[in-house]
Length: 266
Image 1: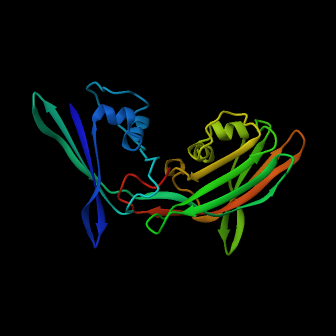
Image 2: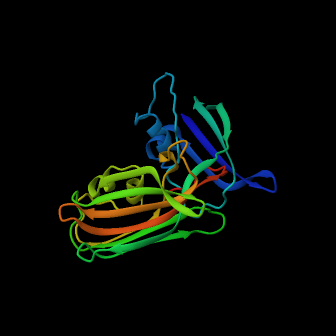
């Protein structure tokens, strides 16, 4: 039986000190059920299930997509010990540690600038930060649909760069219909699904309250071209040429030197 033990050390007064956070798994249980390390490894392994026959496995681009909001610290180190128990005897398989630096898009000051009452009873965007130890702002989206939202609703997203105290349109933009956004998109759509939008498209009239949304660091392109800006989103109904809603949110590219793998992203 292969077993993995994870120990989280907090970085405090220039030292790594043991914390109360630790995790222990049988290897196959981690790969099948764990939503922190296991899900990252399973995704990198292409969904291949345990057990794994002898072979070379090259897992790349792993990222942690689930983190408790109130994780107790933001800097530290993870130690991992792997052991094998056979015939009543236990021996070490490997030992290692990891320090992580995470680049993420921080989003603040969201504003809904307009919504059409023919399509929306109300629409509101909020952002909240859970204490000093957690630098991430989590976004909430509260919608009350007046009519069904389906693929006839289109969303155009434009990224503006902050230059000399002005927001100037960049070459980065995204365009999709509502169903593609909510069911397939891995940038904003994944955050909406993680925030609670779990029903399938089309979405029927009623209230939808999405909470604790963040952009997963793994979807941010390497070499993102600017560090500060604003994201504008326009919702339209092309068949009737109707303006449905629009708004914006300020963004900045930031880095956390956070040495725990329960990173802060939901």
